[in-house]
Image (cartoon, rainbow, N blue to C red):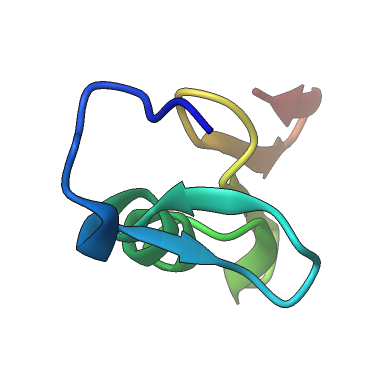
Length: 65
């Protein structure tokens, strides 16, 4: 099976779902796993949804995104 950019098989792991990935990619994916947070009333943050996080703030005239 071909590997992407890394020829050392020690760096390729098999996840519980059967997917194969570089160990550093799996580690980073845990850091940015998808989650929805509300640090205080009227403020929400969606983390791990693509390349950037989205933050929403409840304002007098609506929601600022």
